Length: 312
Image (tube, rainbow, N blue to C red; front, side):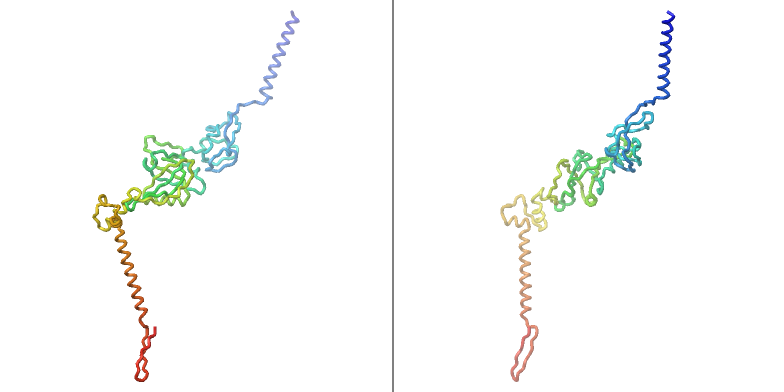
């Protein structure tokens, strides 16, 4: 029995020594394995105002205890946002360093180089009843006000991209949901088109027509449309008014050429043309008569003979 006890004690001591050795090695010699998480970091140096694309960021393992507050863990949460500060390569991307996707900074950075953003005020009637959304494509219609003879409508811009609708939210601020929405649409235009739109805004009424985003065709018929498309008889009525006529158009026989000529002022035009032709003929006759008159008359006397020489 004594021998068995000694072996048992020896085995327990040996196991205790082995466990103590492993514990000391694990805590003093073996490298510690820390928990890590994948965070979004900058792929290269980027200046202030950079619009982040997928190629600008990468995912990197970061020690969990060293992850800064507000770090971005998914690349999709950083793409298409704008840097509010400059960043260095491998620097963790923080939410506080990025603009909100719908903020003024984020929207303005999406404008292509060489283009400008111009806003137009619309209503439910001029803005396709609220169907226009950011990214939509629209045509811009200009209506010049005036009388029936003066009013016209023309398409001045085609296939224009909508940058935003409504009011922009500055970074770090919120808008009262009870506040009325601003009926404004911001369009992306070339500088010369921006000037044309500003002139149209000050001279008449602007309306937008919504396009299919896949339709990039350009309509060749962009000239002004007059009120004759609404009332084909407007010209006849205006001509009758200018001539002081009292003929009732509704009761007139428009198939009679003489009535139609009277309504449209063609009779007056013919009389004017006849008067002009008469004046032209009189002027030609006067010039011909003047051409026949001699310029110089010389009296020549030869003895008792008297002769007049004409020099033209």
